[in-house]
Length: 303
Image 1 (tube, rainbow, N blue to C red):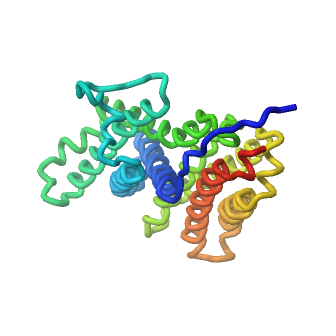
Image 2 (image 1 turned 90 degrees about the vertical axis):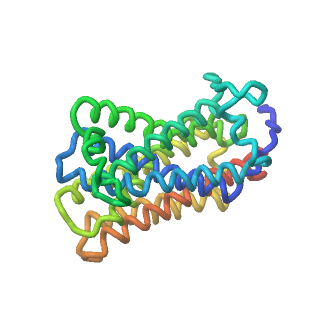
């Protein structure tokens, strides 16, 4: 007979759900932008610049959400520095510590990219630094920066799912696929925001839509794998309101319908791309809400 696991749920609510959602968008868009810079054409780079414009503001919002959610917001810096000495504190064995430092690095790099595109486009009087901004995207310096950007964005996109898996909370810790599931969702939602931000149809946009369709398909497979990997917890989860949200709000509305629209664009004509992108975003939010709340549900955790 399996022993019942008794743990105290972290009591996460809307602030954390929005952090997971917006952080996933930012990370997914950022590592996709870095990949575009590395393997795309100069025409493709216009899409990367779109991602750089909204990634950093989203990171700032995520930082505010995390700090506000703390019981003692004024102590947020304790995750990075030792309170007694003020020295940097990095615990390689702690997912929270590693994540905090990587989030700081991600925010710094996103900020550099944000200022860089402002300079390239001559906004806020930064046009005088265009030469320096161009160096971030060309030559050895640009390649090195974009490789690091892709790696950091990739890590943050998967981090929240991995963090849930690393807890002792039943349901979250019962599947090794949460990190991969959150990563694929971050890619699809990040691309969706880029698609919504672009007005003109072009070859680059069509390739990005295809990439989003692949991300949607992968996410569907990972949802199936996630449910299978939960074993005996799958039935109570699927029977709960959170499980129904995952199946209907994410799998059906957020993934299957957008895929169908992209393969049958004549159904909505010019509205196909924005409608599909909005549905992907809705699915991305519902995914995080259903997973976060289900892990704290007595119906699930008590099994």
